[in-house]
Image (cartoon, rainbow, N blue to C red; front, side, top):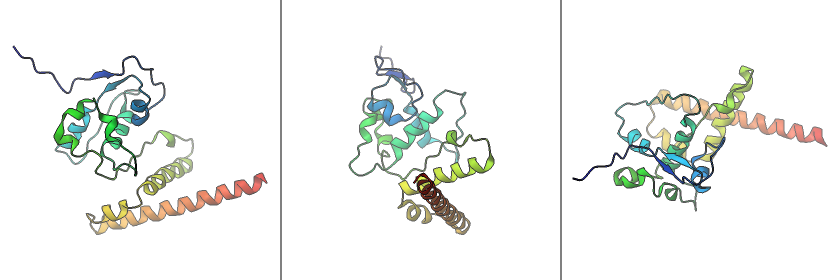
Amino acid sequence: MKTEVDKTAARIVNPGGGVPCGIDDFGELVSDRYCLVDKSALVGGVLTCPHKVMLVTRPRRFGKTTNMSMLRYFFETPPEGTNTKALFDGLLVAEDTATMEHQGRYPVISLTLKSAKLPAWEEAYDELCSLISQEIDRHPHASEFAIDGFGDEERRIWSRLLNRSQNHRWRTRRRAGADQSLEK
């Protein structure tokens, strides 16, 4: 009697590898051969989710940021000369050919609010603007990609976001220049 294996079941990858204390970057975890739980079946779940929004709630220290990082590495068009597909070799998702067709095909905006836990609202806001600026800088072509499918209101919001992001970068560079001047 043949028994079918549950492909959504988690399995341990690199069981002899080190324990990744404080590391939540999926690429680093796989490349440096840390021991981790293969939750890559989540990718197929995201693709087949019938809802516009997917809310992922888990307790603290349960891998939410690592899973988001995994999704970014999976879906994002990698930088020139980079092969992110190799990160998924041997993982559950690699066995799903329909899902693998989506690997490395999209610009991905990835934000985590971990670094925005600051005591003052203004500091948290500046940090969030900085995170958005970094993501926009990572995808200079994304605005053309995104705007194609936008309605008028979405275009106005995107335009304001880009302007805020550019203003924030300018203020940050200006502060950095002032700090360097003070050091002299």
